[in-house]
Length: 90
Image 1: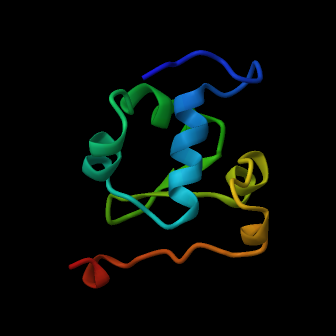
Image 2 (image 1 turned 45 degrees about the horizontal axis):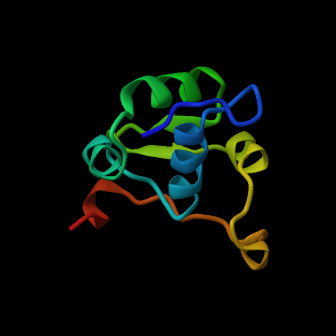
């Protein structure tokens, strides 16, 4: 996967991770299945306060991350993602 900077601030992988997390929280294994390189991009996104690591180990997009992440579908602009509790993961 390309880590080329798209806007001088976020890489293409970071933007795709943010877009994926818009749908809901994901565990690192789920992110690793979708993206070749995820460790450095997720660490960087956490440092920028765009995503957070939840107590049960999943990653979730923050409100700041939602604002920074471009919508792929403008009809979804006002839809909020649901955070999933560990007991709901099955």
